[in-house]
Structures are given as C-alpha cells and as structure tokens.
Length: 241
Ligand code: ADP
Ligand code: MG
Image (cartoon, rainbow, N blue to C red; front, side, top):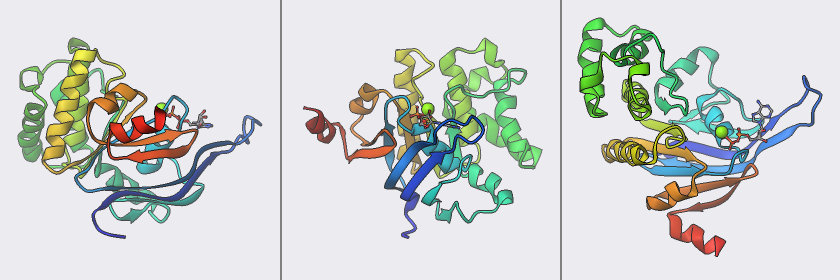
C-alpha cells in the first residue's frame, strides 16, 4: 500500500455476535472499502446505528474486524500485538463525544496526564502543555477544573489532549453533539487550522448540515455500508434530489 494512506479499509465486515444475550448477530459494517490519505479532511456521515462508532472502534482497535483488513498509518491491525496497541493509539488523537476529561484535574493536568502515562520527562511536559493549550485558545484557563469550563472549553481541552503527542491523525466523534451551535463553528475552525498544518482529520457526525457546510470529502455510511464517498456536498445532493 502507498505510504500516504493513513487509514485504509479493505473488504471490512464487522459482526457483533449475540452469544451472551442469545440475540441475533448484528452486521454493523459490511464490505467497507475506503482509504483516507495523509493531509485529508474527511467527514464520515451516517444516521444513528449506521456504523460510525464501529468504524471508529476498528481504527482504535477497540474492536477487531470480523472479515477484511484495517490499516492505520501503514499497520495492519489484524497483525498488531496487544502490547503495540498503546503506540497505535498515541498516533490517533481522538476527541470523544463526551470529552472524557478527568473531573478532579485542571485543564493543564488533564493534558499533562496524557503525557505522564507515557513516561515523558516532566521538563518536556512543562514545555508542551502550555503550547497545546495555546493552540486551542485556552492559555487563560489552564488552571480551571472541567466543571468550571463551558462545554466548548471542555471540548478544547479534549482537543489539546488529543494533540499532545503530535498525532498524524485526529478523529473527532460528533464534535458538535454536546456543544452550542455557535461553538461548533469554533471547533470546526480549529480542526481546519490543524488540518492546514498537515494533520489528517476525520470528523464523525450524524449531522448532514455540518458536512454540507464544509466542502470536504464526505463518506456516507448507511446500514453498515458506504453508500457514497463523494468529494463534497454537491455530489451527494445529486444522489438525494
Ligand atoms: P452509530 O455510531 O452510527 O450510531 P454503531 O456503530 O454504534 O452506529 O452501531 C451499528 C450497529 O451495530 C447498530 O445496529 C448497533 O446496535 C450495533 N452495535 C454496536 N455496538 C454493538 C455491540 N457492542 N454489540 C452488539 N451490537 C452492537
Ligand atoms: Mg455512534
């Protein structure tokens, strides 16, 4: 595969087996083929239940493909060892929908913690954390606890944390889901600025309007299948009209 592929799915199928619950098997993704290149800004669009979170979990190796192969940054995730998974995840900056901040830690500490768990020297942490907080416009809020921050600010702390290891790929899961509409413009602008510096950005969303507002490649998933992989909103509109 070319080295510019950051994410690549080859004939990927994901079935959740209902053994424990004795319920039927669920085909969450079916025959998914796609590749996302270095430096791209891509929306992954789909209704609730379409398979977006499954797509994300396969990339993070929280789930394994039932069939087919998933490559991230050149690595075949079906071949990756358990102990290599933390390294894989360090190359993926994820902003989770619910932010996943530690409530007892300040913005600074939340970001620093992500570096401490990887045994980065304190001297380096003291240099890096203020820098990433400044990138997301939070220099003045470094010592605030999550509960003292607005939703948009908490999300920017989560973005700063995602950026701390300079990952080649940043993934935002439903970035506009838990914040006010006016703040969603702000986070999208930040993601675009990060993209312009060369980072690959994947925005997972169920909001058609969000994807349509930015003229970016939009991969539409429906019932576990890629139904459209257009370069922008106009190609997709042609499908709907
Ligand atoms: P989305 O994020 O687009 O809402 P998901 O990837 O979460 O979609 O879900 C796709 C399908 O897989 C849905 O039918 C969902 O109910 C099912 N599903 C997701 N996770 C599991 C799981 N752990 N076990 C069983 N079924 C699941
Ligand atoms: Mg989901």
